[in-house]
Length: 386
Ligand code: BGC
Image (cartoon, rainbow, N blue to C red; front, side, top):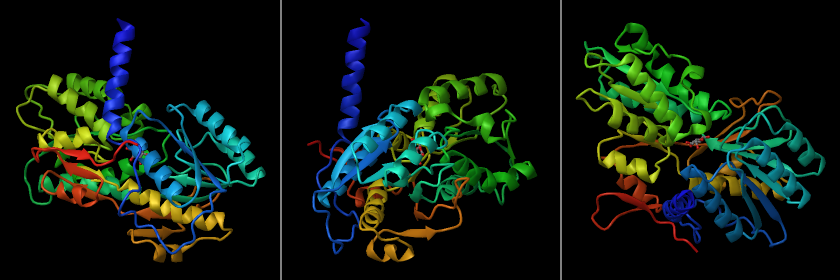
């Protein structure tokens, strides 16, 4: 029975990720077509954290497709969200003599020794999406403005409840991300800082009293953990008389757990506001169905194209700076102040996130990465498996 279940689970996983599987020449990448292509001799090693969270499947495939289109060989590895495995994966790419490493770290603080080895081997490292901490071996960071992601979630709540003008009080609970992910506190702080003045005024109340990132962090960004945490919070602090108005979730994988907990365990009659991030297909469906209110969207195909441009320059022995952004059509900022990894301030290219609700889902269709299903009700991915 276990085997049958495992087989079914695998099929379901394959099915759900097929839609974000290998892509053929993504369009609208924003890549500079004037930059000389690779000549097929250089290999880029890409270390992604896990296949079990939807977005990294998309990142891996977009990166692979774009680098291959640009004339580079690609070695792509997923580390099952395990720190040791990611260290081993990177070591094996160093042994394979890749020319450049792109790393989305499982645990940003646990790669120092491995990256020292990369440096000794003369391999440059670019931190992809998540900053890598405590190392001088990382040359650049390509991500989104992570603090703004949380700020957009907070502002959404502020506007939805008209917090500047209301005389009501509302109850809110926070669900944050993985403490090993350097992005997670940025998301939480962006949201919390935006809402703090309403919390201080008493317009927003937090019945659980959990106001600190550490109290609401979710190991591995796991949906099941977020579900369990929210079930506990509902059981301990909410009753027929205490209504939950807002579940501020840092991303879509945690929002799925929180939404499930609200469906199964919440006794109130209202539909709490639920925030998210990423535009995962299930969450976009939940947005259409009114179970989630918004998601902060980050176009990871564009993140891949900025990464490609930075990589091309590094591989050509150049030192990319703000002027690199002249060669991409993607909106992004060059930041040499915000991301200190404990050893150095890592020069960063930060793309711009934006809010998606049920009213502007067409913006996702405009990216070319999503399309409406046959009934024009839900969105699906346009990625084709090869
Ligand atoms: C990414 C988010 C993602 C989270 C979990 C973060 O580092 O920036 O987009 O939701 O990891 O995968």
